[in-house]
Image (cartoon, rainbow, N blue to C red; front, top):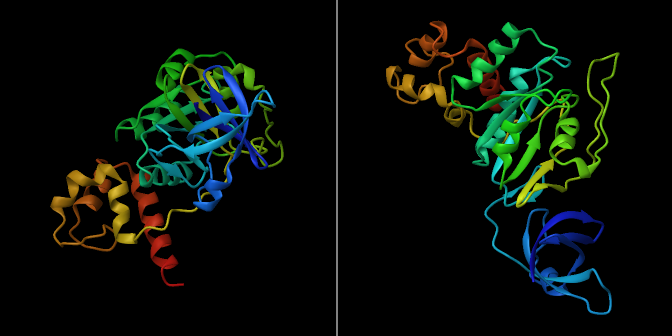
Length: 291
């Protein structure tokens, strides 16, 4: 039999096969091969006749991909969720998420929750930054369900990693997509206006046939991946068309005098917040390499 690992508890795994779940244990042969099952793995397993609902995992089928954070395999896409307000969207943090997902070659959709709290002009200013560089942006309101049909269509038939900072309402949104999950929702700290972490482990939640979402713990800060500073520019896709206008080969678009990217940022062809984040990230990576 074959199924998908949707949850891990201690040394056991919950494997879904059709509409039935089995509690499975990894056979010793997997340990001998130094193979450890991951959430999202497709596996072959054998039911234990004398214990209904119990089974042994015999083999881990080939993975399409495997992420480290969160530890999940066979992911099709990522949705990065921020709030339109309370907490206010942070482009620096969002760009860090985008770089991490780009590094893992995952298509990204940006979901903006709490659109009922923000002024329309403020919402458009934020969403236009990312729509203009090719990222799909889905406005959403967990309180009213506005935007739910579009979100359901985006995730249909796929395994989606759901990420974002604390307090943006990820659990509330996922509760609408997978009501049976009964996930704990958090509250915003009145003192510091930050969210309290409510997701404590990785698991796949079924949102329909062959449709799963993987919620991840909230982040208030996020380290950049370990990439070379000079490679950072390739994670900012809007730079590409302006690089040929740089005078010097190997231009990193920071201190050079004749730089097409810097000129584009000055003229508003590259959004100044995106360029400023690039500059900050470049210096961060450059300084990191010194130690």
